[in-house]
Image 1 (cartoon, rainbow, N blue to C red):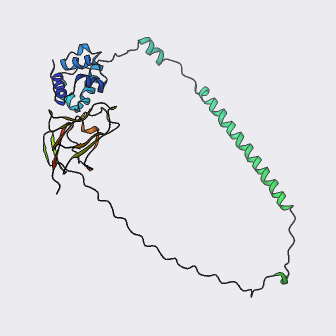
Image 2: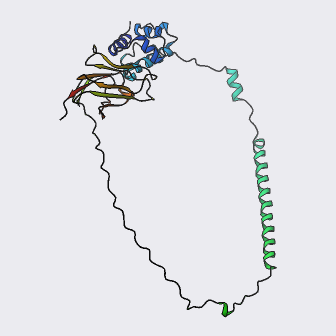
Length: 298
């Protein structure tokens, strides 16, 4: 058994996650997970897959993969060396001495294309000149229109009265009454923090309602467990393990004075709302025990 395997097994048991749950989350067969924990890498399908399985397993537990690989690099299987292909002397000679196309053969198609473009341009130029010349001739032969005289009797009188236009009356402006703005509750800040344990004091007189929203694109999907008071307490909602589980995780009318929310990977959590008040989450700790302590409203 390697130190890496022992560490991963301890982290899994601390989270309370079974081998079946890890298999369902990572899609890695249970026998391979057991082999990783026991350090039996010869039972895995090659060193490349072994490193990939360990990376996926660590991510499912909410661990920092780079830190795990650096700490336990002596226990990691060595990556497989890629075969180097060397060309024979005959092959390299044939490539270096291959006859090159002459300069003339390479430039003849380009010269033909340039000549064709030039010929088309000349033809368009002469066609445009002929069109403009014919238009000028047509304009010079067109008859001029005779001058038109207007009888003074038909002209409108300058003294014609123009009806005065009434100025538009200003309509009374309606008074706009501003609707009262809804009071926006500030995020609830943690009261105390001790290691992975973070405590929030929730102002509530009777019960607590909890909603835990999980990011749809979270990979891997975080583990979420909600219990009354402690690990041995009653489960208040089904545990969230896979992306197909209910989202958000909801608890209604909890009468307990203390709720514990176990988060396997805080990166996958969008927000947590208690009694219509959002919690200000600490994103620096991947694994957290969030305690919701009910206190009397002021």
